[in-house]
Structures are given as structure tokens and as C-alpha cells.
Amino acid sequence: MSKRSEGGMQAEAKREHSGRCACGGVQIGFTADPTFQLYCHCRSCQLHSATRVWETIGWVVAPPQSWEELKFDGIEVAEGRNLLRNHQTSGTGHTCNRYFCGTCGTRMLITVPGDNIVGLPAVLFPSFDFAPQLHMFCGAAAGDKMKMLMPFADDGLPKFVDSPKDFGGTGEVLDLKAAAITDTGIADQIAEVALQDEEACCSL
Image 1 (tube, rainbow, N blue to C red):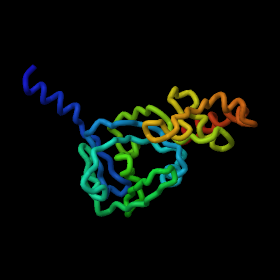
Image 2 (cartoon, one colour; image 1 turned 30 degrees about the horizontal axis):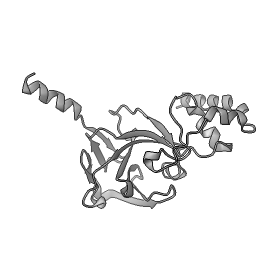
Image 3 (tube, rainbow, N blue to C red; image 1 turned 180 degrees about the vertical axis):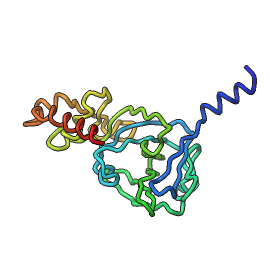
Image 4 (tube, rainbow, N blue to C red; image 1 turned 135 degrees about the vertical axis):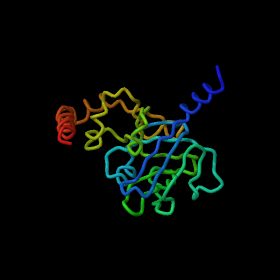
């Protein structure tokens, strides 16, 4: 194989994915292959994104000299670092820095320094093919929480009550269908919730 061909393959492997906030002031790009891809259902992510689930692209990174600089191998805040604002949370037992654009409010990235984790919202990167591996922080299988999980019942992905052991959690996996059948009133709502989600998607 020629050096030119090898270089072409390397360039393809290192394709850059770029995303911007709603106002365009902040741009983030990455070439590094993600360590993990997942759905997060924790209450903190729900509140900060105003959605019931956060689609996450994540990396376990080598510790930078300063987490405040937001400089990581293969992940870069290319524009608008001065526009980013941070809201720190610890509701899941991990201290998280949640960065958003101070102009338009778009959520841009999350860092968990204690675990050397960086996460980006998959929706910001249209060129990236999001392929989730699991669900985290699904919580107790009851009430409204169960209804929010029902659209994912048949996706074939493990649904952790908190998080996998590798992430510092218990590793306990929720049997969503079994829980739905035994939970009072929830089984009758499964079809209704699925229909509501389908109608909502069709109306977009």
C-alpha cells in the first residue's frame, strides 16, 4: 500500500465532526473515537436539557492540565470559549460541569473531572452516526418514570437502574417489560404512550 493510500485511510479515520450552538457563537469539533454512546435519563440531565432523555457521546480522557481550559486530545472548543457558561451539579453523586452558550443557552458539553469524562450532545453533530449502547439512570420502574421509558422498551439496549459498574454504579439492569406488567396501571398505558409518541413525531 502506498504512503498516499495509508494517509488517505488515516484521514478518513480521523474525520472531524463539528457542531454549533443555536446562535452560532460556540463551535465544538471532535476527531477522537467516542469511548461510549448512551441515553442518560437522570433528573439533572432532564432539567438541564428540558427533555426526558439526553443522547450522549462520551470519552474517558487523559487528565488535562486544567479542566477549565476545555482542551482534550481529539476534542476542541474551536470557537466561542469565552461565551461558555458553567452550571455545576452533583445530583447523581458525581460533580458535573454543564457548559452552555451564554448567548442562546444551547447546552454544549459536560465534564466530570473526577472520572475524567467529557460528554457532548449527539444532536449537535449531524455528520456523526449516533449508535447508543445503553441507558443510564432509569430509576425505579413505577409511575410517570415508567411511562417515559416505554418508547425504549424494544430497542434491545440494557437499561441500568443507575449506571454500569465501570461508571461507578451498581450495574443493576432494569427488566422494563416485566416491571411494566406488574406495576399497577402501567401495563394498560403502554400502547397509549407509544401512540402518543408516534403522533408527536408525525406532527413535527
